[in-house]
Amino acid sequence: MNIVFLVTGLLLVFAIGYLFSNDRKHINYKRIGIMLAAQLILVFTLMNTSFGLTIVRNIGNFFEELMAIADAGIEFVLGGIVNEGEEPFIFTALLPLVFISVLIGILNHIKILPVLIKYTGLILSKITGMGKLESYFAVSTAVLGQPEVFLTIMKQIPLLSQRRLYTICTSAMSAVSMAMVGAYMTMLEPKYVVTAVALNIFSALIVANIINPYDVAEEDDLAQTEEQERVPFFQMVSQSVMDGLKLVVTVAAMLLGFISLMELINVLFLGVFNISFQTLLGYIFAPIAFLMGVPWSEVVDAGSIMATKLVTNEFVAMLNFGDISAGLSEKTTAIVSVYLVSFANFGTVGIIAGSIRSISEKQGNYISKVALKLLLGATLASVISGTMMGLVI
Image 1: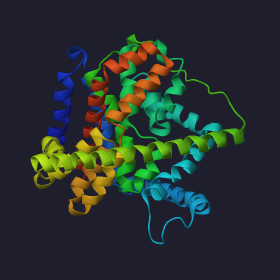
Image 2: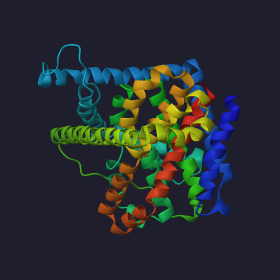
Image 3: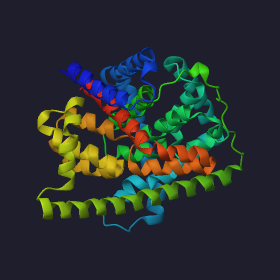
């Protein structure tokens, strides 16, 4: 049955993508097939072999150690504020982002990350047949996140064709930054988070090849990346600290607003229609969850979490998912967990459009015009990743 649901999930993505495709005649099925095969190898290796499980476990342990190290600074500055035994979300998941942001800044400063991203992107380009720029960006956005990643190709953005711009923005919405991975691992199984990060790189490019096909050979290869001005080491550390703190404040503010807003909508729907808004969304998304492989008895619960992520953000959805995941099967937990690990939501579209507009007003206007199609593409990429995970559970 797993193979049947793999087919139904992928057919769903292809049917919707084909319906909204810019150029159906030039969809490169061979390229898509190669990337799907790469995903199959990847998910089987990471989830079904001792080698892959060791990699996933070690990465998970690495981020757990980072979160534990970050506790030293949190305890020194804020120790004693909360009662013993209590673990507020901002302490366990958000404040460690400051330390992880510093670590990423250091690795970037000493040129480890740029070299790793560059050569991983070149390998990805050989596998996928995509341009070097698209492959570089797909990898770098999975490390740096957005909007920061757009600064690495600042000079190229005004010169990109609209098709290439759509592809890189789909990658930006389908990925998550390494700074966020540790926080996600406090809410989801680390093995699902690690696998999702890897799968999403290919999923975004697959969807872009359906909705937005083009021949890379006909495009100018603008693979050179922007060299950032090198600043003194301790200035870089200070900037990274402030960047991490801004990220914490932004996420915390979004959670305060979105969770309260969702509760208000639920109260209104319960009062008027005698059904919560999230349950209603669950019924809407239930067929999608079923085609991805979620057992029929759990599709409404899974669908409500999937929809919550789309209309709010992944943090709100993960927190809600934590409340119900204990009562769900391992298969549903795996599929939904992988689906949640991306930035595909309405708020992120605004962030990306604003980031692009700050670099090029013309390109920013284009992204604003295709915002819904961009969100559709990123959501379909999450469906592919979740469907792939369902195959091996």
